[in-house]
Image 1 (cartoon, rainbow, N blue to C red):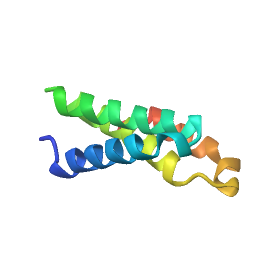
Image 2 (cartoon, rainbow, N blue to C red; image 1 turned 135 degrees about the vertical axis):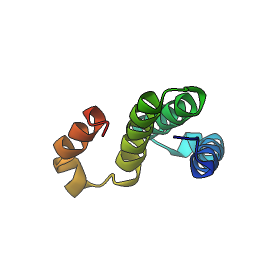
Image 3 (cartoon, helix red, strand yellow; image 1 turned 135 degrees about the horizontal axis):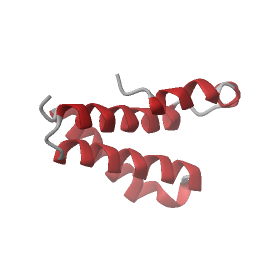
Length: 88
């Protein structure tokens, strides 16, 4: 699994948004975005396809949690937590 240019682009965009809007984001949002960046960068650096998939799944989980934050989805956040452990 090669590093996708979309992942590189997404990482750069998240970094840009985070640098410009850090003060207007909640602490939880900042943590989610920083974790997303961390996992995507680890994904790009590793050589193992299995590890790449694991880091990608963790990064997407953080990204999804950030994007899907509202009261209804927070009630059902247990479903999202199950994605953190699923690397398939």
